[in-house]
Amino acid sequence: MAGLFALILAPGGALALAETAPLSDCDRLAGFRALPRLPDAPGVYAIRYPDAAVAACEEARRASPGDPFLSVLLARARVAAKPEDSSVLELLDTATEAFPALVAAEIGRLYETGRAGLPTGDRQARGFYRQACDLAPDPLSRPGCTRLGVMMIEGRGGPTDLETGFRLLGALCGEGWGAACTQLAFQTDLRGIGDFDTLPERIAALFEAGCAAGDLLGCSQLGFRLELGDGVAHDPARAQALYRDACDGGEPQGCSYLGEIYRSGLGVPPDMVEATRLFAMGCDGNDPYACVTLGDILSDGRGVPVDLRRALSVLEHACWLGDPEGCDKADELR
Image 1 (cartoon, one colour):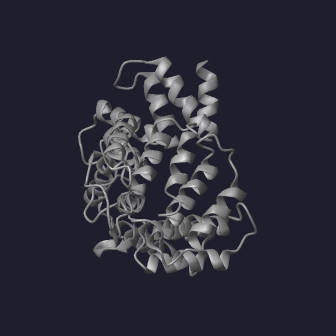
Image 2 (cartoon, helix red, strand yellow):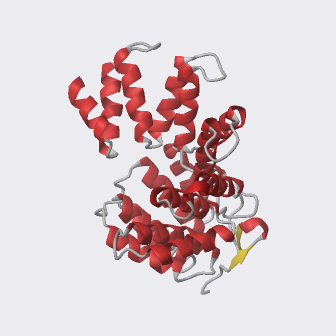
């Protein structure tokens, strides 16, 4: 690799550089949880404090302008703070030579979600994910390979290819990439792949594998199945623990599921104030169910003061996320 930087796969899957910046608040606030910049570096599943993350990453980058990984983290933080910020493309470009697979996956994600001033485009997203995946076995190719597998299965951005998509996710899951296990569980569930009688157990096992490998969405989904006793022994206490761990790590569905626990008083005293706080965290993380539920609570004043302005705002956000119920409820409040 050109320049001073050389990619090294460190124990536990962490990434190190021959010359790099020390650990910083940028890592703590905007680092990739599954792909830390340095061994044992902190990271987040989703950026919860975007303005603070931007400031921390700008400071870290000023202190160590030669570390291209910090450019990727700053780009991630800026998108979280301002989704339409097109300056992230220039930041990512500065890191392309050092981390081509990671940058390709990040640009693919921007096209898939229509951010950084880019049009929403599945075809472009799939192309960038393929660029990332073609760089395997670079460990930084795994996020792009995972998204490519999902798009192949769903037939988005190109032809449907169930066999290759499932094989790709299965291989990544077998390598211990948690997000691939979680997505393999979702796709297996949606398509009823395999023996129907053992389907719930296989799906739960995949979510368990994803969670064990550090994917917090997998932990939330495993918790949901533990709460229901679906494919796994009923264990509401463990379910709540998984929800809390996922929510604390920034995974929005964990916050939503935990909010339901407090709203319904399942194993805990009912607490609408805490439920409202948790649903707000889920909504801030773009979980449409959390936004719709929060809108209902605020518009009806269920255990909290009525706040129609905020209720309309979160319902409109649910509508923007593609939830038709959010659109209908927002129309009713206007």
